Length: 139
View 1: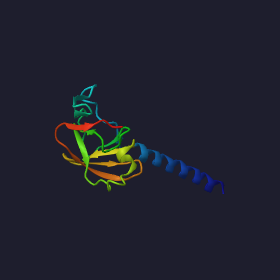
View 2: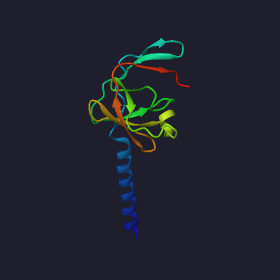
View 3: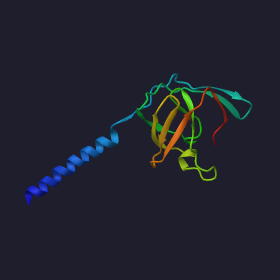
View 4: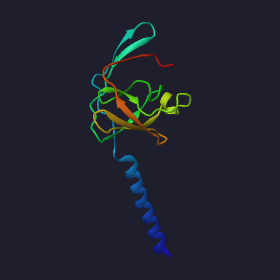
């Protein structure tokens, strides 16, 4: 009986170590920014033009990504470019993380395709945009 209990404790410890390893390994911090200050300029009174400021990512590496308070669909800057969701939900019912803060995982799959996995495990395909973006301020 004592051996069985001891074996159970060892199995739980090993299982816990494997679980901890799976949840913390394989996720990298984003590459350093190109510049400490993002580059943007006003366009009229309520819009601005912004240029990407993100560092070069590596294909196949999963990075921890925080969307900011305006969500995934507002100014997603990754791997030296801005990105658009390819498969967004119906406009009347977007997932919360499209317009609110989320901490998920972003991964570059190829030169022009990436995925974002939300904190609720929803996977969104992303497509690279070229050049700067012009948009209004997030409220």
